[in-house]
Length: 198
Image (cartoon, rainbow, N blue to C red; front, top):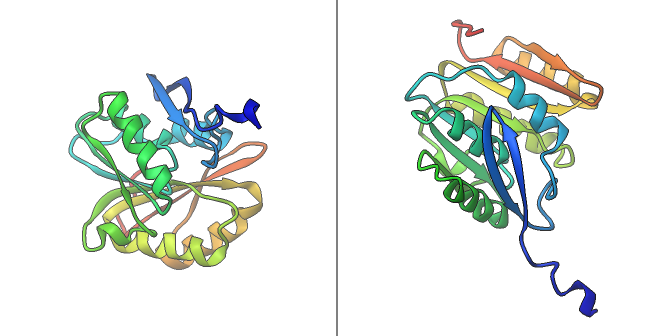
């Protein structure tokens, strides 16, 4: 099949996210390899401004569109990108480096296992739709455990998972807010502790 000899070549495209001009390299097998997906774009439009020095997790980072965008827009914050796919971690690190971001790094991790014991100000994720409720539960439990009091979790999911995340975040965090809903996606937010940050 000589016509497929270039399938292993990197896919590269520019993107404008969080008012930042960025370039992403991806490869086949990673989520949305040819363009920034709709859920990620929606989430990035509605995330809050983060304070200098805050530590932010991009959970299930893929090739890094959320983490890289946040690192570019928040140069004094620390962005840790986590994924259980070693190819995704490789590309997320490559994308942080090629966009000259020294405040973002990607680590191989199942949930937050690789940073267990550390604390964070926010956990952000474009939730993979196909991993199932057990994995979503692990992600939320890990997020709750890893967040500082007053820290927040921001998940974007397909609309079909809205009831699940509303119920599960209410159980885990004691609060839930639907930040925004589009035709296909919904942004969920919950806050750890009593100090709600709007």
